Length: 244
Image (cartoon, rainbow, N blue to C red; front, side):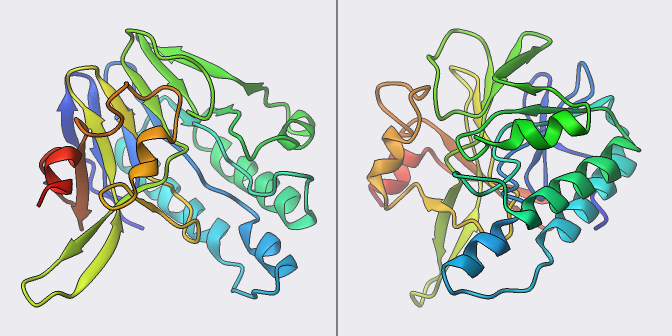
């Protein structure tokens, strides 16, 4: 997938890219979240069969953006794999393939998400540590399912944010989005997974309590950003959209 090398700046030092990636421009660190590799195998256990193409498409997207902007490092901010309870064979294969493919181009760091209970066993064979969180140029990066908020600029995943867009005749389309609050400098990444369902943060009020790192007023002050191709569309605050 060809990705424009020009990102959309949300505050000094942070740019967003179509497809779900964010770049810390001061240190050239690319951050993505919620890949849920091996999700197809987990769904098969539940009786739903879908083509096993997710890992290949995510690889293609990331290799394209890496070639376009040339980051110094790639950080996966949690939920690299999907199954909570064990390592499925497909997950082991998909994670190994992903790591081998990506680290030929760029150093890779992985943060533990709530789906990554057994990921350490896979990564240890590949020589990659599994971190709880990390900091780059003063920006805190973690998954978002646990922890306490502090005053540092913060990037998380976990919530899988999306918004439902409606046209004048009532047709609607749910699309993944970034969420950011410029006052507290917190950015929530969309899920990179192609099959993990997004949480509509406008209609689903439980999204306000989806992470312990969110402020007391939840997502109300966060602004959604949705990409149409390489063009970023910035929406009013979630709280204002809920009142329309």
